[in-house]
Image (cartoon, rainbow, N blue to C red; front, top):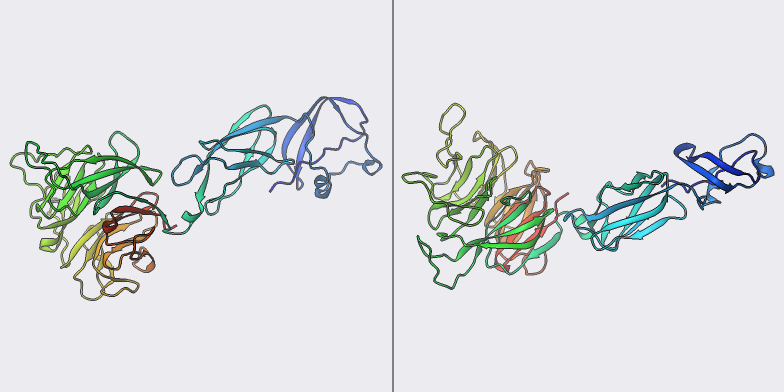
Length: 466
């Protein structure tokens, strides 16, 4: 912290009125700012100890005279204190220019805004205190240069809620769902924000019909995300034709693709929930059998977990068989007899769950060319790296962490990018951070983890791993 301002000492002047005099603000021997004394300021005569050649005051001398001189140039500082996760303002936080004496202090308003007036024109440090919040790791006070008669618009100062500083700590739950299953993060139409899409049993009771067929029980709910925090129920999308949906993904335009083994098909809907009919005589996603999950690659291709034929099949953007750059058909990925959920990382590597694997191979990482890069995990038991009925998998593209929903053990296990066990969270129950038959998972760009807690009828959000 910068020491308090020093009392300037004027040599060879007694009781005179000064028209203007430059003053250097000294910090441990270093000049950090320039100010001016204005006309009308009376300066005391030097004492005997101040006679002779001028010397720089020592830190102990500065500490003995903490009050800044009156009529020194000042400025103002405005800014905002925000929650690092939500981007929302934090009310009633104490903001202080703590590097000057006496300190200038204020409180934030309901939107997190603050105003510091009459701040000496020099380099200062802004500190913030708010019960239940802390600075992000490696961050602290904000340093600013205040200019005379000017207003400094400081950058937002971000704080973390204290409990969220714990890796994968429980954050919140989205209640009042009905046996939610697969979930996905995707864009909202005509917006720059992301949304959380959830397959949910809507339990329709009215005999509603459209032109094609009756309304099914299943639908997709979409929740707005604000800085990674799911906080607003947006809409219930009345999807038709869903019989037993298990997996979904969202493309860049907001269209939703659902893997529905009940109808043995992949169904496409707009971001507003209207069914997108296949063109006449078209053949979309040919050859799939009992599709369990679907994911979108950065190339625009689709990867489908076709559990009925134990293959992960690749399709192009037009939903036909995928081809490589040479025009050759890309063969399916085989060798998994108990295919469940799949995931794709930023490099288009595929991660597969094989719930029928023998030995070490429940989780497999496969390159875009179909090469098995590594595998890990055993069936049965509840130790580290053991699984009971795993259902879904996701990758945190910030650090490569791999999350696996270990449904039978009511937990989520986390592994590093090489498949080494790191941690787990959850446990059987209905309390915060507990699960009862978790099913789906999604990780957003900030590393927030969302889990569909199926039999507790909710979505739970957990903090990033780091």
